[in-house]
Image (cartoon, rainbow, N blue to C red):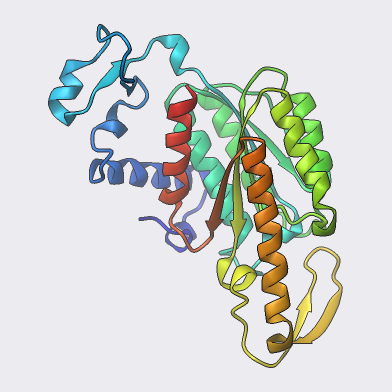
Length: 300
């Protein structure tokens, strides 16, 4: 299992992505998915009732699972990875933060998809779209995306806020051909105006895209509110505004508010048939990669 702290010392997002993916594939050999990792670029699971003529019996002999050989048109998926690089993602204010986790996850997904000959594009945003590329499946394109992402996450001087709702509306208009849109964000826009985000997500689905959300959070503090008892000064990482509070006095109200927001997200994603994944930055990357791989297999 590879955690954020395990790759933090490595230089270069391409090296980090390769190590995460290779560790993930190695782990699949030792899991109930044994055999799947070797063949997933060329095979899919057999569905009961379909023709048996394309079953790969050699794979069955090794795995005791039925896989069907995939034709070229079945293997090509278009995926737009959308990464939030706003200041709220730079929390906690240390190197092992949500932005680093999200960027390494995004890079790993793109590396994994390119190995499968799928086409990937990248969108970086804060209060506006900072980068938007179309989907390609070449290694040169992938390396270019890694360079752009690496530069973005190392630029800590830009004071950027979040405006996820307007950005997602724009992406719905920019991605013309049906694609899988993977959103990696804490979705901490103006929570009081959450209906704007829900409207933007609905817009993406209206355009026939498959939408997958990785909701990135630091569970210890942002969900469990595990701060020391007493007076603490909290600083808004996007506006710089500070407020002093007694943690024991606001903990219950805070947890109630954050849980209410998450429940609304879950409900709306369920209503729009959007795949919602809550990811803690303390979790190994394999958790998110496994969920994505299962989703991709069903989609193609």
